[in-house]
Amino acid sequence: MSELSEKFKGKRNWMEKVIEYIPGFNGYLDKNRRREADKVLRDFLVDKFNIEKINLENLREEYTNEGNLEAIGKVDNLVRLLEKIQDKIRYADRGYSGVFDEIKIGEEELEKLYSYDYSMIEDLQNIKGFVQQLKVEYSKETVSNIDKALKSLDIKIDERKNIFISLSGTQ
Image 1 (cartoon, rainbow, N blue to C red):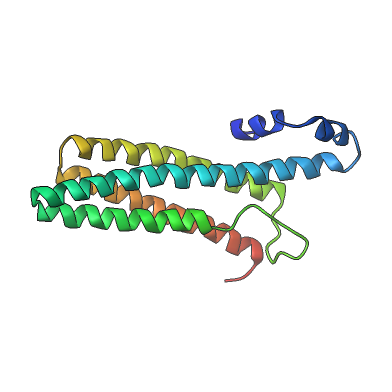
Image 2: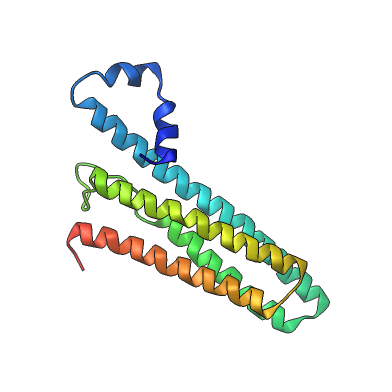
């Protein structure tokens, strides 16, 4: 079981601990904790990407004040791509599967989605590092690295959406 899943499992209240002994409830509680972890992780990613978006916006303003037209346009493109990614993460299908939901997600699929989401933390760290480099000194190479990392992340988010499509059986 993943580290974040273990963290949520350890934060159970006394009622959940008692209910865990009732047949059938244990799996129900585990699913709910995974769903909660899924939401927490994605909210975390959106918040952290927002910090990098603000950093890029501040750089864009700095480049504007300096009159660096090339940098303004390139950083503006990065900001827009990052906003698009934030929206995709924020509004992506969550790991919920209610009685009337069109897409039913089992534990195995939910764990796969959770692992997929968790891998985006590494992407976040790479992007954060590149933005820090850009804060030190503007370079086309660093802008290109940020652009490539964001586009790769954008593709990863679309692939995650395809998991939901395959689960629903629709195209």
